[in-house]
Image (cartoon, rainbow over all chains, first blue to last red; front, top):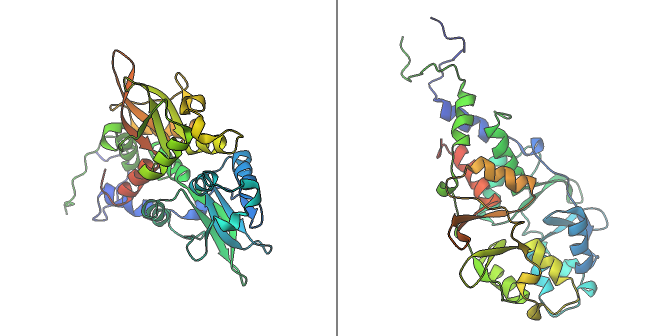
Length: 159
Length: 159
């Protein structure tokens, strides 16, 4: 009897097909909204923004809205146990700055982002668009997005 | 010609099989080592421990090594912008305490942990063993573990 489910024999196993499909997932399908602060705001205000917006990573931009830095909870926590007054230090003193920022673009593969997050031990990457002046931040992709992708795979919702 | 790859017709598609396998992954296969602090240490010392051990979540235990609290980077950051002297506040003042702690056990399913992490907006769960006195912490499972599982799926390393 003919099976009611159609199989096409490609020489690949089901696992290989899954792996191939996973490797093709792109950043643009799974991103979150970025939260940015200006490079002149204080560390105190950045921490308050982080709580208000409920994110784990802030992106720092200059007056032209170009990416100049990244602030993680870890960066802010490190600053907060220092001796300085948090309300008087600007974030550009403590942020991770270009060219030490790992970025990604809409067309990049999710699996490459996952690899960067793990290898560089960071929680989020900014998604950027290239402009004449530099990188414009358009999104955010995090380990939370990766956890959600895993859940959707189990729910049969992606592949 | 006979295909060289054997298919067994189960009435399920490849996707359904993947989903079924994913849903069977258990906590014990993918956990990390837990980092614990005593409930009497100061917030300052907890922050230092977090940096030294390079983790995002600390578990707080009593004198019998029983789980009594959880400290996230967010909890510590919130405390650090307060007015108090961090070296003089014990962590049990600011920690999330029982019964508000979500725990999991070795035999629990990874997908249930993923769901808890997303729904409760937390980064890590303690893995516990039940004892007469309460919960003993045996491991830690985080969004980093989830990201690694996703990578291993793409590398065809798990399923």
